[in-house]
Image 1 (spheres, rainbow, N blue to C red):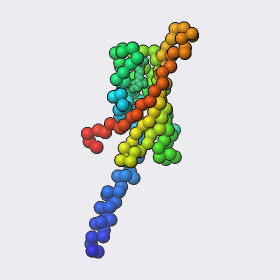
Image 2 (cartoon, rainbow, N blue to C red; image 1 turned 180 degrees about the vertical axis):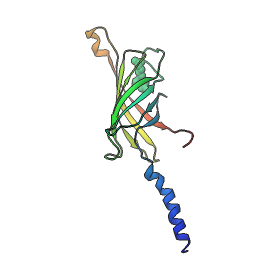
Image 3 (tube, rainbow, N blue to C red; image 1 turned 45 degrees about the horizontal axis):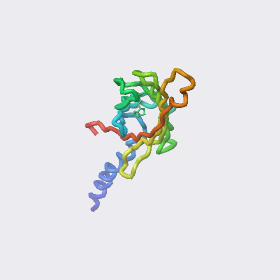
Image 4 (cartoon, rainbow, N blue to C red; image 1 turned 45 degrees about the vertical axis):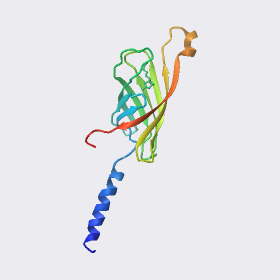
Length: 149
Ligand code: BTN
């Protein structure tokens, strides 16, 4: 019994430690949404700002797509465990822009889920057409895990 105690202690630490070390809801990494679009978010700086890239599966005019740059920021998880964030995608195959805002949640299974709303601004030639230039919607993103994990 005396010998088993240190063993059990080490075992329980080994089981519990990963949940301490894997910081949930730091957005860095690869994500896929309910439309099948993918985004890769780069490292966060000390303020929570980040760069990334976004590949959409759908477009308004069924144009050929290219992976497009995105720029965003999130509240840091030290302060909030389920942080809010926002990012802008500058589409590089058309003249539109999408802004996303949302929050990262950890669901009951421990999975990170990004619940977002977006505004997609399309260019119009005439000011009188401004009323029809903005689309709104929602997307849900989940993390794409690499094979190594
Ligand atoms: C365009 O067609 O003007 C640019 C591509 C827009 C893709 C939109 S952004 C919101 C929604 N979520 C996606 O992943 N793709 C579409």
